[in-house]
Length: 433
Image (cartoon, rainbow, N blue to C red; front, side, top):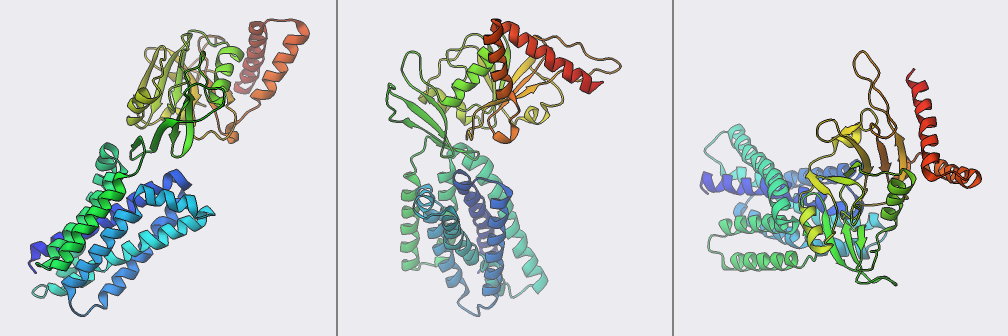
């Protein structure tokens, strides 16, 4: 075997092995999330299978190219079928509890694939007879690691984002098929199995019925059946309902959107405000809401076009920025700004709502150098709204008390809100002093 062909095979092994790991982590996101308790065991199992593959490859004593070609062919089938969206969805839908589905996916797809590809480097170094052992192993590991780097970067940042996760799965399977064909040496059986595997992988990855499947999330927009609604359409992000809209007059939305509007428009009385929404959802918060101006920030640029085409939100005065949301992590310390000195009201839309939206609190601006910034109830303030219970404050109790005093004293809603705001400002001023 020529040195060029050997390094090419090792490069394909590194590219597809780490590419398969990245794809596996992405496939798990809609089902069990991407927290450290998911990613760490997944990476650990992958590395363990890779280590066992190194040990198994070291024991091979002959027929080197045929064994590597066979391993590539089996790994291509595992990647093309086992990492396909329909296969992963089937596992998590029919194997319960979810831990059983996870272990089946890791033990039946990812680990065997890593074990097979891990044998490549120790097997092929046996063919490098005219170089030193250290040079042979070093160059083989160099090309394998270089392939791993390019596989993880190109599949996640380019292929997944612009062509979808299914395209990344097929690219990984196709690379292994190409490696098997390069090693076949006119072996008709290997060539036939390779072409069949490529066709099967293409068929499995064409069938995944999603609206979009990017590196960030899986999006589905489709019709749903709800009593009392006209042509309702739902928007799912990673298998969780993020937005809902129908053709009724007025349109129906999800419960948390209605609750958010009640907080913003009725309880807080926002009018002509700049409202920053972190996490766009389906853009339904601003649908037919002309009283305020909304700025959406979302990490995935694909969400905008798919929501516009499917949900068609006729929103007033809104724009979107596709980037990360560092302001969300700083909202306790300073007001969010957009443009020259304009303060933004703050809302966070979680695509997986686990409870009612609740207020985090109003925060005055950070005192400027040498003097305390002025605090005006209506111009320089920030309201943070989140959907997760761990961020919930005592907003619900305050609103109930506000409504009770309003009913008992006969005050208007604006008078009660002003009184509540003055009480909060006094409490904050005492804290700052």
